[in-house]
Image (cartoon, rainbow, N blue to C red):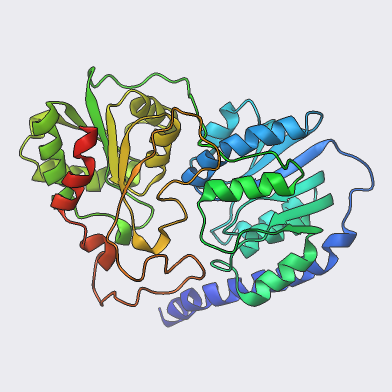
Length: 389
């Protein structure tokens, strides 16, 4: 038992040192690892989440127009739900999935050595060292990256990685929305006229049949500290049903099923609520959101799905990332946008995580949620969303 405890403690330390060693080795030789001849292939690294992928789709379309004779290959995180959307996209020719979180990810480095591309693009502002490492392992005619922040990169990692790229596209040093970062990337690649707009996406899929009028609620999230309490979700669900008479659908992935069930148990109008969390895939989620009258939830990919479907939505947003995803910011208006409403507590520490990873200075031991989430009241949410109802 003692050896097992020591081994579990050592694994993250050893994995980080191995990653640093591989990053240094492959970054040092990246500019000598060329193709030798044209391959007709371009690799785009999008190992981030669903929301990031959705906001990138307009820029993805523009890339297709910029490189008409090339085969666009998109590299995705195998554990993220973005593959279904990428495989349906008319602007993507091939989807490649990699493991970037578990310890088996180190095998991906040597698998990437077999690949060759004319151009490798790292368009993610919140870059990670391991994704950079994968891009250095393959052979490429040219490697280009966005000058991302140091939230997920140590100063040493960023310095080593930046030197391995052939070109680093400069960005506005201020906090800007992810859509603006997409615009900076495309303009850096040579299209100076491109202006970032809210993408529009239509996914053809049949949805479960909850009736003609309903509201979709997503109570889950990628980490529990940013999720609003279930009793407050239940109060808002009851209130929305009383205001509109519409059915409430509690949706999400399999990991959100417990949270959805907890909300249903706390509701007074359970007969007007259906728990669908864990019972439908991503494309069916798109269909549910597409036909909904309103979408409400935590800061998850579902809110961005509503935005690209032009469905009214509102999100409980953690203060640590205000400015990056919410409120929405675009460079070009199309006239049909419906931007999600961002509901947050206006604390002086907002944006605390946009430059580097660090613990919340106001969090207390044993606290389930961040203070900026706990301070959002039911009354504040009602005031923010009543115009949509």
